[in-house]
Image (cartoon, rainbow, N blue to C red; front, side):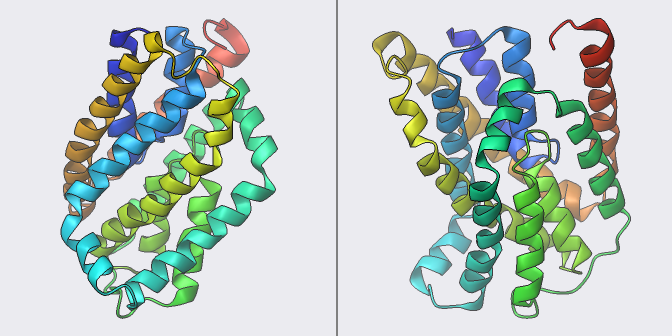
Amino acid sequence: MNFLQALLLGIIQGLTEFLPISSSGHLVLFQKILGVTEPAMTFDIVVHLGTLVAVFIAFWEDIWGLLKKPFQKLTYLLIVGTIPAVVIALAFNNVIENLFASGKTLGFEFLITGLVILYANSIKSGKKTAKDATYLDAIFVGVMQGIAIAPAISRSGMTIAGSLFKKFDRDFAAKFSFLLSIPAILGAAVFQLKDIVSEPTALASPHVMPLVVGFCASAISGYFAIHFMLKIIRESKLKYFSYYVFILGAAIIVDQFVTHMFF
């Protein structure tokens, strides 16, 4: 992987992690388009950690509040909301790894993402905040996040949609989605560490700088994507993202079954 590829993929990861269009799906797609192969898994982990930095910077006050008072309801909601994704990831790990490797379901998954966020956009803002949300609400949002373990199902799109389905206030829905990404990204990184061991050249000298470039690019672009997404959610403009993933999903399906340029 060269510097330009690392920069482009880092920016793509940062933007798409928080926009409801699936970061994993876009990474798989663009790695195929750019012909990137090894060490893809290591790079994926690094750029995801870059977006984690973006969350910490954007929501530092909320995170600091949780650190100062860890035994509060929002903490418990985040813990409960994380559990379903962990269970789903462990249960379907091999299946998901095969889907990432082949990319054969990308087109259909993008279409599913589009349908979910299009419907979510039509839902009127509720009034629930951390004080009003129930643990069943958190489990439901967590299940939505677990479904997004598939490559082109958007994690942010599913969790924001799940929060809106449960009548969360739009600002709290966004905050809960982004805070929920912290254990999700950390857990995925730890779980995938074993794959770095299987890539002995991943951290060799020629590969280190592209990793640094990708990390910085994903952190910076992710920070701006978070603030952009907060505005989009408040203004109920999620539908525009659904149009994008509908077109992208359809184009991928055509390529998979007709043109075979990348798949």
